[in-house]
Length: 320
Image (tube, rainbow, N blue to C red; front, top):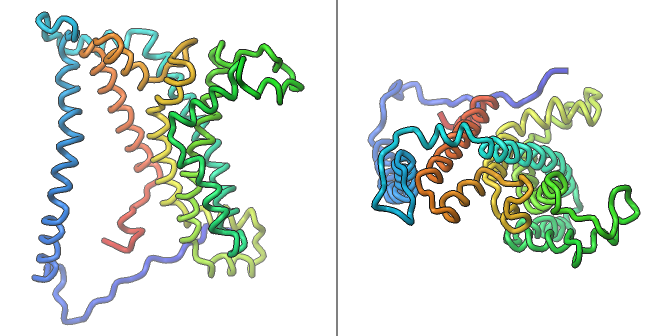
């Protein structure tokens, strides 16, 4: 059975229409578009490009905020110091681990929730969607505090409720070790952001043509075959957007680690490392270098996703 998608719609134009010339109306609409979007684009560039350029500039200096008079240009030495330090690689490993685990679990759970929301009875569909989206409405810091109290050795209920499981007792300190603490961080992240992925996947699920599903049923395709050959190929753009947004979000995880462990026991992420260098230690040069490296990694992830999925969103909207 081959992958089934609808053929792209062909655009028709009058025979008398010129080939590739741009009409006055099209030029006028394009000009209006730039006039309307131009101010917003300028503000966006101002608030995003300026901090990035300032961070790149500061990263080239040996600059400590408590001793600004001794600021000196050091070139790329801050980057060499960071990349040769084990702290950077430990924080990078923690960040990659949290990203892979949370995004993979959230993708599976998000698909399940999207199918449930799509197939639910029409009468209960609004209530069901609202209930599923409640965790995403909770502020991340509040969510992190709730999960920290739940797993705390003195105020938490997890040790009491799950004391019958091997390895869990009344004195189990979830935040006393690296792996157990990262497990709690991942649980909190998955609970908080799975509704976000399910919402994006639900939008993609609604774009799958029902006629293809019916045709596959007539051909005798099983549920699994329809999912692999019809549903998933037609949801490619939605899956890419969901994975891209969530991966970038997970890669800059900060709030949960800040609230639960404060980076103790090797649970520090790259974002937390940048915060610690810049805010806690006031090492502006080193902190800026960490931020620039994090920015470059995020850009690389975005480029890999767009190139790997080979999805043309403009074409998917029928443009171009």
